[in-house]
Length: 331
Image (cartoon, rainbow, N blue to C red):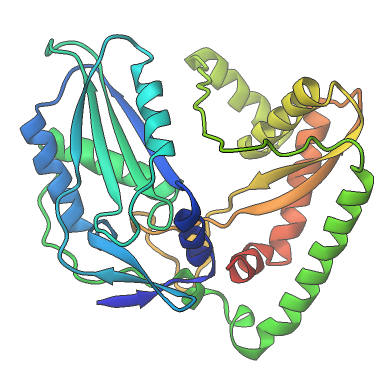
């Protein structure tokens, strides 16, 4: 079985062909699962989701998923010597490419010590073309349920999930999409020119030579998390906008030394609820679209004012349907 990739899926495939473009999910356990049980659970999850049995194929300039014979999801064991070993393994997995032409486009590592009652971590790595954040959480949850015997075995699915592009609302399909794309590209070009002009002499140059990704964990306790959620509700600001504001302020403070400058941030809207018909949240597929925006930060920027401004910017963009247009023009 073969299925052509959609716009954003193709962009992820092209990126993954150039360098490692992986999604990594880490689950910490208060014990060590038996490797045999973990392998059985991995096999069951793989049968349930056809994209875990698919490979990517490039014909000319077009990418396709090909569902064919696939080996099991590779599982390796890593000896655990401390609480931060998972971080080292996650960094290794992020920077080690997956072969796009070989199925499965996923692998797994068990970071565990010999004692049965010691903590352990499962590090699951996927090619980003088959998994987004929602899908990764789904796979991890199902894997844990199957390891614990809490989920029934299901028959292998032989149907690849539909392209998200084929489920866009009618006004973003057919000939009616072209004027919308034209207006969107004009806005993007204007924003890009404006950003380059306003940030001249301020932007940091990209790093020279080969680079690698690093994992920087941020741990918030239950009380701190609950307090943040309560404050966001009172301010009527989504948590995503608050986190974007925090990252922008951190970049301005640590990299640009509080100078006034426009900075870029990203939003990752999940298309599942907006498709027609909506896609099941359990479906293993990449239904996130990456949207880039610019905010100009002053030297005395208020965190909550910035979070509210980001939220309004995202809301206006979503009302214009730019989550679809970003996806359609990304390839």
